[in-house]
Length: 294
Image (cartoon, helix red, strand yellow):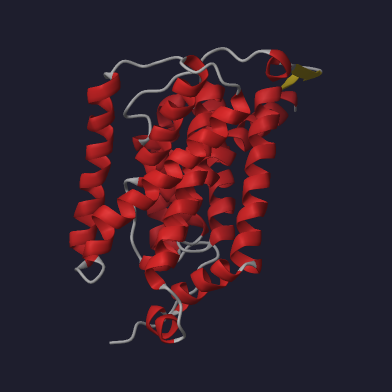
């Protein structure tokens, strides 16, 4: 029983990170129907920004987290303006190839400047090193911080989407871009804001991963990005609550497979779930079948 509880705690921590990344995928897809494969590399950039803030500028965890979110926000907007906006009316395959190209550019551009070797995050001090023992179940302060930060960011995201004017514009563009434009909504500004919001969450996830796993490298975003995409599809791509549910589900599955079935099979199980979802319910857990106008 104690081992089960420990795996649940570990799964919540990992699922929180997947959920933050998945939210960026699902928001962008909900607005412009684009799978932004460069999003996982924005997450990687966030990890490196946090690393240099902590090591070079000797900043604490919270300032480093906020700076990483700001830098990733600007990066996300720049990617949208430079790479995606000129292709707004292009075919989907052209935009998809561009997304893959941007992803490769970020990965190997980062590798050129920081080299391919892995780097270790500085050890946390003070309250971040505390551990809580409940019998044989151990909860670290880092796990608590990951969960608290994730929940706060998700609540803030839901507030923005549901209660603010820009959030209403995002929902309107998601439902019908042409009708939203006729109603006076700034389509380009709304899309840029969506990229900014998703990239900020990815930057936060990057710093949390660096602190939790203590190791980063230029290709660190590839596999977590794919798993976060699986999480978004599982919950229903384009649906924000679905991305949250999917993130925690995939995190739990990965941890339980590693703990009970062997870590060699965890990735196979995760992507096997994706295949099963696409066969049984292609729209995801919360998705609905909709007719396409032709």
